Image (cartoon, rainbow, N blue to C red; front, top):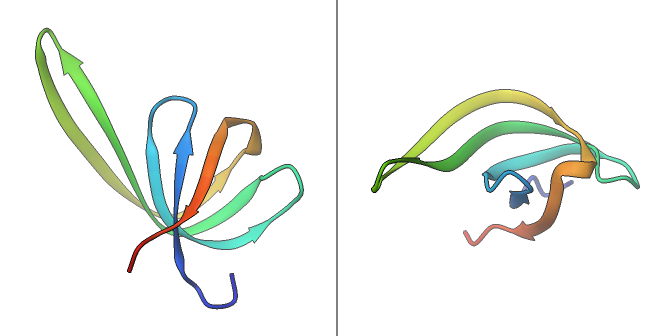
Length: 72
């Protein structure tokens, strides 16, 4: 957190988040900055990768599967 290293967070809805952790608690609730959310939408047999940017986000800990340090 102090080094402001980005992390990759895998969520229960098959979305991935790349962000910097500003704050967290023991339940894995997190306040995130510079968030990039990535997911895949399927329409028929065609898969489309989507992404969006969010400057600040509160993430509830019950949706978190795993938190990994992002490769630089």
